[in-house]
Image 1 (cartoon, rainbow, N blue to C red):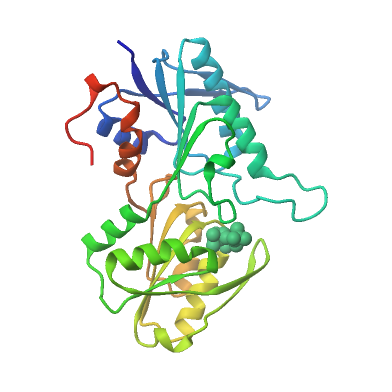
Image 2: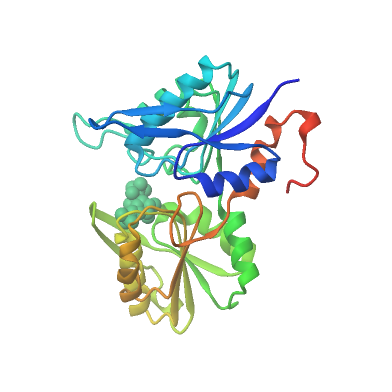
Length: 306
Ligand SMILES: O=P(O)(O)OC[C@H]1O[C@H](OP(=O)(O)OP(=O)(O)O)[C@H](O)[C@@H]1O
């Protein structure tokens, strides 16, 4: 009988355990030792025929090396199929050479990972101008799940003012903002964002009257420097929003920034557990488990997977 197990890179343990539990699998943590010169030594648990490699790839440079080494050890140890579960997939934002000589990091990552694993499952990868994730990972299976069902369900459970307007900070956010608004039967709108630099954006709304006296719920895929969220919150406050809350898929910002969001008028900020963070409030294990169920041998299907 073929075997299946989950192994996680350090940093993903809690979310990986939730996912493994939901799938009825064992979960072991890959050991990463850093030598004095900065090089890494990786030690994996015994490979299963199908090994799910759980890796939240925020702060990715070291983690990518650990992932490559883990894949090498697992293949050599007998793994026939490696499935990368990367709830946050980094280096997707640079999808073109915007200036002469720039590397297209999305393409380099895609080529590298496609040579390393057999399947990739991720969530809300930043593929604004790349509609099909399979074009990024040539020759392997790849799925880009949406966090919006999990986010909408969490918002519905917590209760939400029916006059709330769901806000996207830029045109590219329209599909997910629309999705949340449809699921919660709320109005939505998206701003026009102009990015001037890593930490400089300007935000404008076509209908400034819409928010007057109403709660605003900002929804975005990534918060990195926080510049977008802060600029959007300030604009919403100026437009007369009664409250501003935010919910994001990938919280990449340093936790020490949370007071800056409060200062900008954001009452609460919640994130999914794609990356471990103090703002984590929405678990992705149900969505990931549903996508990974196909990996389970029929004899090992747990009774309850959503
Ligand atoms: O917290 P921040 O540092 O502001 O970064 C987060 C923002 O950046 C991304 O969009 P981006 O402006 O890169 O848009 P694009 O990829 O569509 O050009 C993302 O969708 C967020 O809106």
